[in-house]
Image (tube, rainbow, N blue to C red; front, side, top):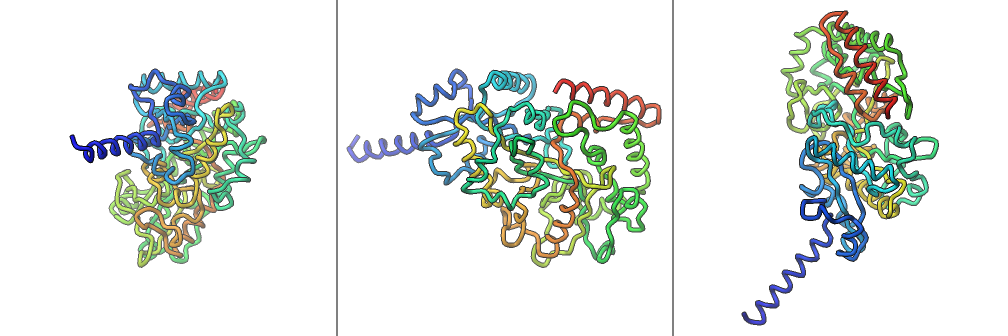
Length: 443
């Protein structure tokens, strides 16, 4: 072998080593016996433990979304790297991982940083439906139990994120009397989207209650009155509470109202929208999800697109319930809280919320919290944006959000209520209400 060839081999080896050192380290079978601390000794840099539990398949390190969002972060790959513990997988593996890591957290250890998705049940229609609970079943209770680090001082000194541009009503969901502990990354709320002119909605005054919607003379508005039961019931408990905020009798009333108002929408009205390729019903996304939850192309809302009506679904109080789809938080006992926040700060910068693959809808399960992302000035990946008229319509619908929750097992319990007779409904409500009481008491 000549000297030139040998030199080329050495350069290739050095480049390979350099790339490996800067890449997040997954807790793969090759490294099962290594802890983050042991990896620090091997790599000679700080190793930040990250729990990644976003609900859609093959996320994070496997497809590079997390790496994509961190490109350009000073110190990443040189002064520190990541030890990613993904919750991907089915039970019992997932359950075993969760039990192990929660035990560590209770012992004052555990991951430095949590990147978690809440819609593991597929309530939004965007994430893959399943029966796995999110890692934190009750994030608000975790705040109350002092699992997460208060972040107000960090946020005040943030270098990358534009906190004042984040949707206040959603961000408030991650706050308690100790300050901001959870940083919501994406959210969703129930809507029906139809073309204004096609359905005669140019000068329409939007009803303020679901019953008014169901009784409307406009077919699209009648269909818009239909929504998933958890969205109609809305919040189930006060933040951090140990019991439901309504009685079993009240829940039965909500379910009866839901059943009666669903029946008020004729099959012909529903079928007409089902056949309309431009119509969307479910959570607000830029990608069309059909009324049968089939994925489609991005809804054209930009230049030369139709003007849309965006009709939010009403909860039983007449407001609109939004859900946190994904959030970031830092362990109160993190070894590297400063680096962990620097990662959150960088991930939440405007450019990432616009363009990073980490914020793709199929991964986040909702819209970014930056209020201007999706405008012509701040288009999302593939150049998608809303023109001025459609963005104004979106802002009006978004302004109707009256409460925000973290989806969890109590919402799944409401979704499980099913009956074909009054007697069956009473029994199903009783069964699920008792189950919710047990979940909250044990939380």
